[in-house]
Image (cartoon, rainbow, N blue to C red; front, side, top):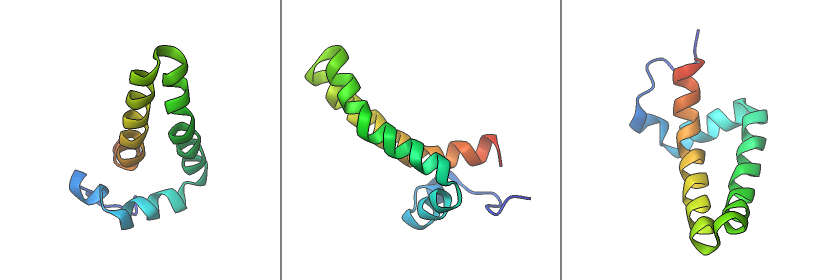
Length: 75
């Protein structure tokens, strides 16, 4: 049984829910730290400044959306 019954999208974006999720899933938290840190550098390497900005935006979106997506797919 999930500890997040019927978690809506807007509830998943709250900082408390995101913190609870990442505290409960340490391996995902570590992966997200690596993604957020290295995505802009990967984008810079591949396509230059535009890629760095795109990598930064995508990594931030992934940080916010991962708890919701993970709980919908797995939970």
